[in-house]
Image 1: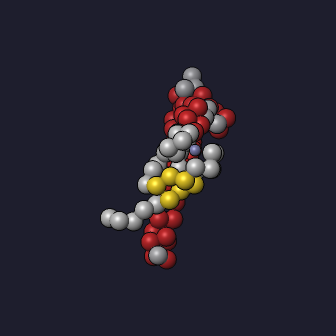
Image 2: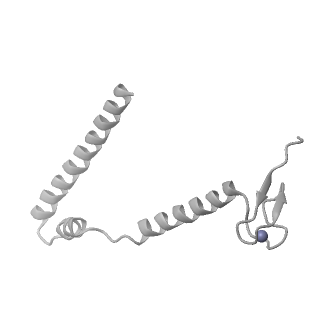
Image 3: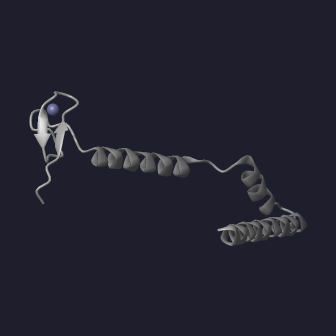
Length: 103
Ligand SMILES: [Zn+2]
């Protein structure tokens, strides 16, 4: 205790002591809180963009083929799709392993 934080308001120029908000105009003074607000806003926007993202044409093509009227085509694409997913999982695991070894 005992340490005083003097912050000059960037909006009206009034000096404030130990205040997050300006005494005169009420604008936010704390840089940490300003950063938190900016970060929270950005995280929200990223999440929103992720949710709004439509499946790629490749994914749509796979989905279409997996619902194909010929069972042989369905099984063929099911196999390719499964192999692809397994390959991706193994690839991710190897990448993780390499990262762990290097670190
Ligand atoms: Zn102010």
